[in-house]
Length: 289
Image (cartoon, rainbow, N blue to C red; front, side, top):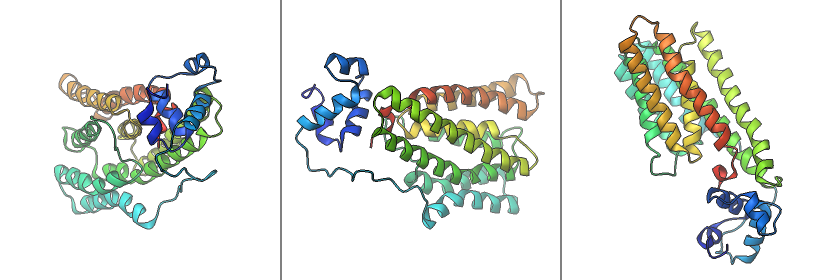
């Protein structure tokens, strides 16, 4: 076991990162018990004790990651909404508004809690997001300019919720006694994130007198969370499915109200991604430091 996972062990900060790495490589609690350990966490503890360190300092016991946003971070995540509010006030056309949104959101998504740093497919969810937003604003039945601005405004609470989820999940690694124990503790946190975002989004849309865009917003959040935590493939597949479904429904059922088409095309992939997220994101491997 030491030889097989030597590279991962030598670069790990602590036993919690080792446990997450072992799970990512397919090691289960049953495998750990065959090696006379209670679970993967116990196996990770022994492997850390037997592995020479590479000089990386371990985090202080009980240390917690900051949850708050500085002024600069908050401003970065508010810029897309402010830019679209200006575009709506000036009456800019749809393509210009979408381009402005992408340009304004790029800095925040490159450095904030919603950034995607790993995986060969990490850029595909972003491309799917841009395509869906372009279809929503520039398609045959475009959403209003202020609706798009409301969606952009949810970027700030989405980023805060994503940071809270990541920090609280990593903090849960230490007190957990098994992978199942960790998953049981993290799953309600994920549900809280989804519910909190839905409440903010629905509140903003209700203030505009419409709920169009709610299914799209939910889909974009779950897809981004999965991509952030190393599951870009299902996120990209769901976004592509939503895009294709909308295109097909627009061609086959042009008389169906645009809100119904969007809800069906985005809501179904959003539900499927939520099920996938409840399975994938409570895994310790999704929260490696």
